[in-house]
Length: 37
Length: 218
Image 1 (cartoon, each protein chain N blue to C red):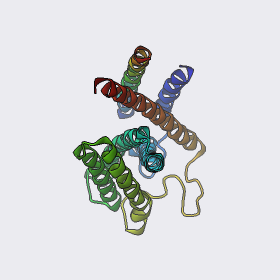
Image 2: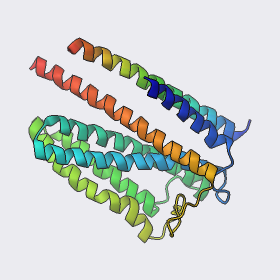
Image 3: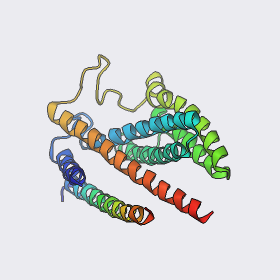
Image 4: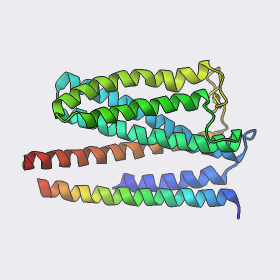
């Protein structure tokens, strides 16, 4: 398999993981902010 | 919400474009693709440390503890991006020069920068009183930032180095990149900046929640 293709897939997986984590964190923080108001 | 979806799509497109288009520097080869990630990471490192210095000055002028929290959060992000730039740089060094670490002036200056900001966190951890910690770390952060332009921009250019210096502009400040490379590179810079601002916003909000909880408990 082409090395570039593998590197691209790995980078995309890392980015999707990071984005998902940040979205989840953002949602949790929003909930806690609403609770503390 | 819309900007998060836009960020996700644009970053994904940038990643695909960075691997699907020809390598940005033909003479270096495929490993030069790391340039689309390594330089934006280094840029965020400098931006975050600059923001830390600005928030530290604002803290010293107003004595509002939230500025100290912001200075610490952005310094933390700067440290993380500095580490990422070091790791991507080491990967490039292994491919281009045969070894992960060569004590090249650029590598050495980044190592010193990591030590300086590592000490900032050690200082913060060593002082229990929050006002004293804020004042001390604000002064330290301002002095630490003085070293950033010297270590990132000056030192690697005055000492002979293996590190490419004309990746973005040449000595006449003209772009050395082709139009496609330029679009991908500047998109990457902009997207990394948006990502950094999002992460900073999140960490500031978390810090605020932690502080308000501590105030309720005490």
